[in-house]
View 1 (cartoon, rainbow, N blue to C red):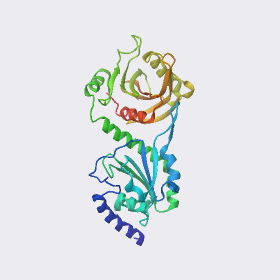
View 2 (view 1 turned 45 degrees about the vertical axis):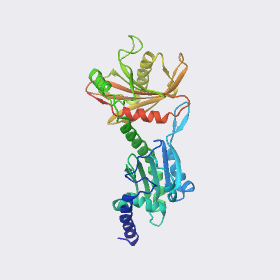
View 3 (view 1 turned 30 degrees about the vertical axis):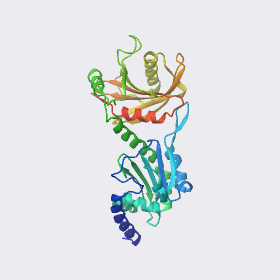
View 4 (view 1 turned 135 degrees about the vertical axis):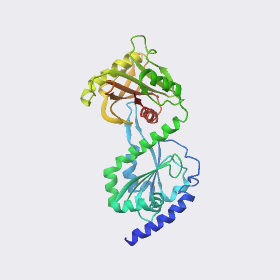
Length: 351
């Protein structure tokens, strides 16, 4: 074992003990109150703060722009700080710490405190790591560590795996948000949906049933269910059509027409812009899905907004399920609303 590695592991042991008593942020020990603030905020910690090379490389990857057609939004607002300034900041829900594993620096010491002996050994054995710490240093807090044994290895890791950072943050935010929303559930609505239609969805008490199969726009309306929370308006809809096999990306015209027919009849003549519809293969919770996303509008009501629909095939029932997410929030950020709908849509299961 090298002398430098031995000194680092010694520091790690001491730091781990200190960390159990008081974490690196003022008042944010594990027995402290959970962090306040938005899931859309990220504290980015490096040795040199805003002027760091690592900040310049990571910040745009974490922020990640999304086109919601009426506006371009960043998924996360990133606040870069120096590791030496951490005690001066409140407890954020999301923290990213980036730096070389070097016990002579403030950021290196913070990383060592968090990852402990095993983490230190993994970094030295593999050259670099992206490590996730849930509920650390406080409950409902995520700390993500991006580290390597030297500058070159860290640059390479960010170049090759930097997009993973935003993916990990988003997945964790949805999980924590879902956990919060489902502390109080509308169990009666959820049970009724399962019994009547054969799908199971966890429904927070903040959502109410907007319409069901018989509550649409007249007798000609297709079968479906909508749940709504407002303000601002966010709608989670579920509908279904018979199909003998799973769709592919090549079936995008058919999928577009399925939703176009549904929303025209169900939502009082809603329409979609075909030129701005995008399709991709994704996962929705445990399910393989095709996601269609785009812009919806209604000439009668003079309004529009963002939607995304997940098409999931159930081969046992030979049904194509459509899980529809729709937001109407003029002048307000869309991404937090979409994140919330995705968090709930991921709970869907089928008989």
